[in-house]
Image (cartoon, rainbow, N blue to C red):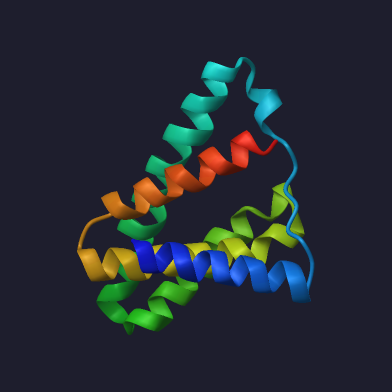
Length: 128
């Protein structure tokens, strides 16, 4: 988990310095009160996204494809589906999805990825 965080942060620092700072639309306010925002953004989204993207998509792709290819496809789809909230945030989210898939492969569990995804969304929500 630690290596995943370091790699993700390193990519974000590089991306922000060399390409552009990633921006996402603030969708939290549309969910209503802060407790609802926390429930949906910090809990529900990471849990369901990890089940769908890493557990089902990556898990299915991994049966037919090499680890790196399956993780890259999973990351690309994960990032692309977040494009509606801000195109500049897509490359870091592709990397995040890719790294979470590799974390799942390494640990055999989606729980570490869920925890990191929850942490990421806490930071994102708090910065809005």
